[in-house]
Image 1 (cartoon, rainbow, N blue to C red):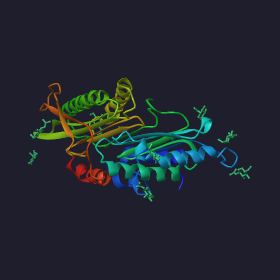
Image 2 (image 1 turned 135 degrees about the vertical axis):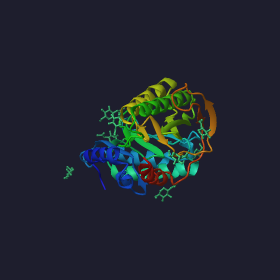
Image 3 (image 1 turned 60 degrees about the vertical axis):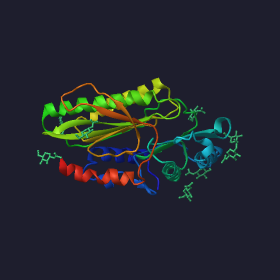
Image 4 (image 1 turned 45 degrees about the vertical axis):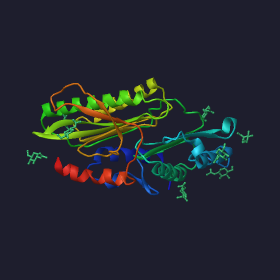
Length: 311
Ligand SMILES: *[C@@H]1O[C@H](CO)[C@@H](O)[C@H](O)[C@H]1NC(C)=O
Ligand SMILES: *[C@@H]1O[C@H](CO)[C@@H](O)[C@H](O)[C@H]1NC(C)=O
Ligand SMILES: *[C@@H]1O[C@H](CO)[C@@H](O)[C@H](O)[C@H]1NC(C)=O
Ligand SMILES: *[C@@H]1O[C@H](CO)[C@@H](O)[C@H](O)[C@H]1NC(C)=O
Ligand SMILES: *[C@@H]1O[C@H](CO)[C@@H](O)[C@H](O)[C@H]1NC(C)=O
Ligand SMILES: *[C@@H]1O[C@H](CO)[C@@H](O)[C@H](O)[C@H]1NC(C)=O
Ligand SMILES: *[C@@H]1O[C@H](CO)[C@@H](O)[C@H](O)[C@H]1NC(C)=O
Ligand SMILES: *[C@@H]1O[C@H](CO)[C@@H](O)[C@H](O)[C@H]1NC(C)=O
């Protein structure tokens, strides 16, 4: 199967706008995985005319990437293969709460999916909710890449009251802002944090916003900050009032969801105080590496339907 860029774009628009109503259909499933983003760049028009050494190297770098030699031990894989203008660079990154085995499985599946969908491209990237894989003819190490990106949100608000929405949004952005700072300061090995904050959106009931933020650990603190600033801006712009939201690009990602713990609850807790707001205060940020169920996508997606009904 080969998707061209127009098809891929259409798929993302569909998934962004109508995810709540057709959650299982929208993420294109390729191989065994639900794909959030696929991007094939600069396809060689005719591989028999152009030098095929590059394409062999793409296969080489992707095949060897998941070797532990290329891992930093925390779900980040980086490698290069080939010489001179035929050299191919690849980076793989798992979500920070993924176990090692699940991480390898995700990157391995992504490798096959990427080679199937982008069979003769100079650059390509693919990500799911669990891991990201990309390759290019230039080194990507330490570079903030904002394109391509995917943004998801519900087209239903958590409340019809403007003041409730405003309070919710303030709380959400405060939580995500705390996570951003935490992640950016995370060091060279892991840049990942999860946290939660309570908010009152359904009359007197307390709801909990769960948030997750991550940067590729090869980014500098400044690069990570810049990337997550872009993420916060997109979340603010598109996810206002939405009960869930996500923004993902090759370098960083930001997820949140109300009343659904979508990350591994065993993650270490780093208490962080949010500024006081209308809603019940205090939040926890959690950091570092741990585990998430293998069935994350299924769970994440299937809870959306009951979630709509609740709204
Ligand atoms: C690719 O180039 C070869 C050699 O010139 C030619 O025979 C073949 O028809 C071309 N294929 C396509 C799809 O253009
Ligand atoms: C094709 O690849 C070989 C081996 O890497 C290289 O020596 C040669 O210059 C390449 N040819 C072109 C046209 O890029
Ligand atoms: C990993 O590194 C070791 C030691 O440098 C080497 O013997 C082994 O072949 C490498 N494995 C891979 C898959 O590159
Ligand atoms: C990678 O996927 C292929 C094809 O599904 C499978 O044969 C292979 O065992 C997998 N490798 C790892 C390390 O999971
Ligand atoms: C990567 O490929 C593009 C498109 O052919 C080319 O313009 C660029 O110079 C290449 N970059 C490197 C580092 O080879
Ligand atoms: C959500 O609330 C905002 C602010 O009132 C409004 O602009 C927007 O249209 C609402 N969205 C939906 C899908 O109702
Ligand atoms: C939330 O509020 C509704 C009505 O306001 C009430 O029926 C329900 O029991 C409350 N749930 C919790 C968990 O307090
Ligand atoms: C959110 O509220 C629940 C129930 O009142 C409480 O157990 C939890 O500790 C609160 N979480 C935070 C971050 O304040």
